Image 1 (cartoon, rainbow, N blue to C red):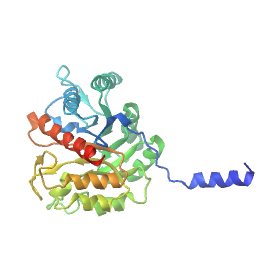
Image 2: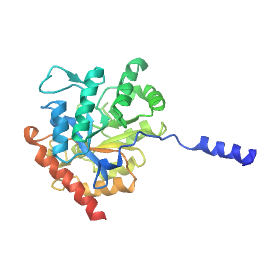
Image 3: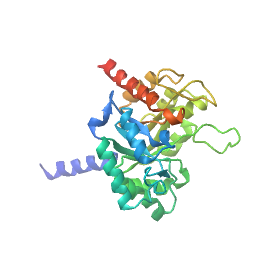
Length: 287
């Protein structure tokens, strides 16, 4: 190679976007997607039970949230980015036993203070997570610095529109786009389709607005549009899950899909199993 070609090659490399990621193992795919549970689906249970229930439902990945009790044996030990090394190892061992991969963590507040934010990203690195989910737009500069330092992705989550709080904008995909579009490519959206439906938005339209910026998804099918909609097994509600999956597939989405099933709290595994079965069937139908 001549010196001129070497310089040209270096220039090309330096011009490429920085979008590395901690990839989820290929064997965690079901129906072509990395699908499992948001542990919040089992918030009446412990972390250990959430892992067990995710596996029982057929999920291969899990997204943790801060503050859940560790186990029935240690109910006063709380799972979060402040967990001790011993607690972290216990959770890793449980994940390995049930063949569930930890892919994400949130929704968690990320402080502007770098030292405090670093605790979250150190935890994510230790757990081998691909991404962290947050709504801390005010900390975007700190988040971008941490993303570059740790190579951990961040997805901004949406809750429903709040009629009594016009300052809450996270429900609007156009607002999320305005926050992330000029930032590091590893910063984007955690697309909560259920909360879009509760905001009277069509999920596929929202996904198209955020094309190229979808980090992860909380996938839900609700029984009605607007406030008050509750979770249903995929394909039985109004969210048009096949169209959502089509759009994610078309966008080359490689993040985790978390089923956050906020209904039938005490016995949701059969319905979550139906959701995962729906995605499995979707994948089989596309082959």
